[in-house]
Length: 151
Image (cartoon, rainbow, N blue to C red; front, side):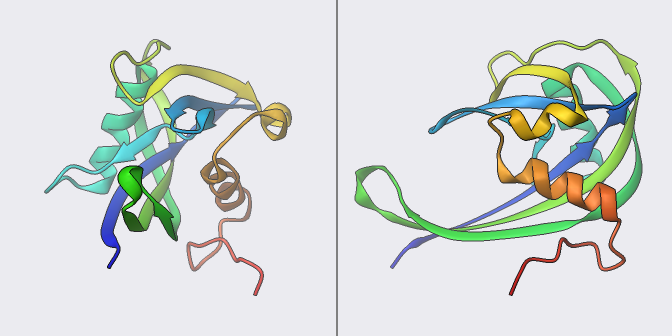
């Protein structure tokens, strides 16, 4: 039987002057750009988690503007030592705007760089699928709060 893992996380889409705020995640497959955000701590509200995570990863304080939606991802994979994992991720995605702080990189965390990236350059970046999902939610603002996937 696969080890079940549920991860609930919150992220913020910050767009300013044609640029999007991204953080570079250091994962098992190398470095990829992602949305600033991350895991919700036990008992923490997703709204507060998004604000906390953006500050941890980028140095900025933000104010949440709107809930864009919730993305659900589910996949199975083999972990180290050959154990199977059944992963389910729920990602709460907000829009936000910067209210203070100064851009800096996270230290001793899961990301190693934060940057404002021109929106027209995002497609060229090595990035996790969440970036495209978040941008689609931001662009389309679906009433049901989810990106439609092809059947």
